[in-house]
Length: 398
Image (tube, rainbow, N blue to C red):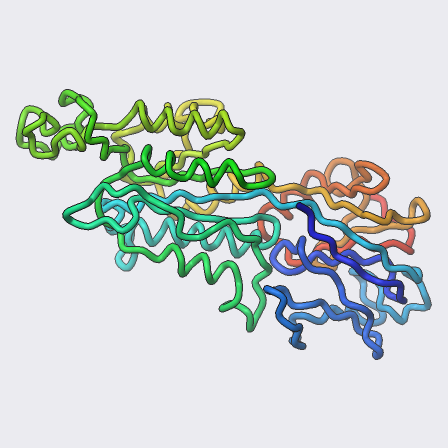
């Protein structure tokens, strides 16, 4: 599905304003009578309200950004229709087992830090992505610690974060939905099996980001020796084999390697890549996390094949790197410029020169593609506005 953003002819020039927080979903509104272009607020159909952050007016004599609308027709007299391709779906599957309550800092648990990094990614990438989330286990109790996980936030378009609208934003709702109290085991395989039908039905490109601090377990049918028993692996077993049928952990404490790798492989076979992220606490399980990553079709080139996070301060960078793999730097212009050599691209009102290495190019007569440094800046979440403007001579890199 694609989102159409329409603008009618006026004196603004061809301006494709793609919103705040990597804006791909909003467009510049019609020119105001006083010559100021106003950006519509993003949100779920809410009426726009004037806010200083929503007004773009570089003013006469500005050295960067598109010329003001009263600049003698410098930017032409036609505003074109723009169609934005669907953003990829990034679906978080977050470990909420009891071990995620371990302190990661004086004021935050492991789960707090993982959730915080995921929320930051959603905020920074805005409409460049759609986002969903599940946690595992879900609704676990002391009596039932191995309940499968489930979805807590359905896949939703990201929306630009803007002042005064946080409570209506995808970021805020994602933050609220993922606020859970970690408890129980790590039923990774059962959770992925339960999520698979929903995930394979999603339109467009979908990836799963699976973040965990330990090895999968909770398979009551498993059998294992001490070498595959989690309590033994973590040197917390007072017995020879805590996963023996009458042992302290029982069969549910066995490392559920084969079923988890199989569940991930089935997702990958359906075209859904699984990125496996191991945070502190998962060091004992590097071999199984490597197997999971290889099965998911998104392994790193060298071992560790999963995304190993030794310091949770770096988790945000790891998530950004994963997201950048699927975020696109292409912009479709439904109604291409009528004249060659009269188009410019701006990131946050700063000119991006035409440059096939670190600027932009025409990928086709109707598609603009950012390249190199410009593309990386967009994918990093450091861009609040993209503008593609026709009516002025193209600035070429020197």
